[in-house]
Image (cartoon, rainbow, N blue to C red; front, side, top):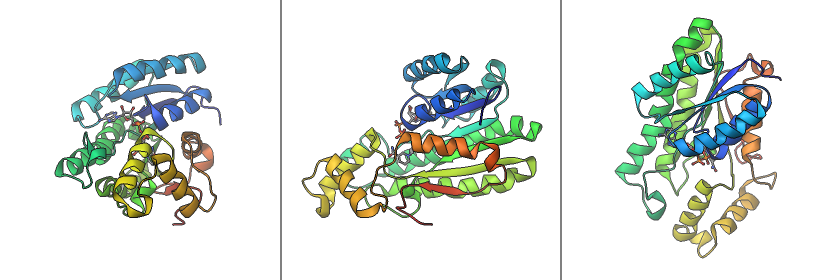
Length: 266
Ligand SMILES: NC(=O)c1ccc[n+]([C@@H]2O[C@H](COP(=O)([O-])OP(=O)(O)OC[C@H]3O[C@@H](n4cnc5c(N)ncnc54)[C@H](O)[C@@H]3O)[C@@H](O)[C@H]2O)c1
């Protein structure tokens, strides 16, 4: 579906999965607001987008700060127009140094919940008025298969992503009467810097993977757990975002879709 004339906001859009989502939507013609705490990387991605769709903006955003989220919503209207699509992608795996720890600390729980759950709610609340006013909008929240079942390496992260699935359902119920859909995506195993650190944790703390490199742990998990026997990519996630915001998905809301090669079948 062409997205010319539409405006999409991607939190955490400067790097990783968010960057690929932003480029995909730009490729279909949308103007993109990159809302990321990493100002420098956001500028680089915005420049890439300018070359594709010609319309992008950045707003340095810490999703944990309510006031900044409100300013982001206002800046989006001023620079690109009201948001048609909000992609809540910003997320972290733990407080700084989480990958060195064998057990989650209170700080890991607090910081992860603050960004992954409360931050998502902050941004959604900030954009709600411009979507309800126009009785139109699509919101896509990036959760994880870690939210489907508690995983041993990072319990605080698993719990935060389960909360994202629940938040998605609650927001979908709240906004349905305004013709706004809210769905979540649960990406599976993606070879990213985040997963490399998770793999190191497994190799250190889980006897089944002792002594392996992070990549070997990753490949072993694909072999053991993924029926389709292949890893997922940021492009897979971006394609699913494109589906959820398309007319084909106009009657789908409150869902969490696993993009995981069959890892979880629920
Ligand atoms: N990488 C994976 O294997 C994987 C799997 C499942 C789900 N996810 C989820 O996908 C999303 C993107 O992950 P990724 O691997 O691309 O990670 P990443 O670290 O590459 O990207 C996350 C982006 O969010 C930004 N960010 C972090 N804290 C922020 C804050 N407080 N305010 C605004 N922006 C902030 C970062 O600057 C970064 O640009 C996350 O929600 C993550 O939990 C990732």
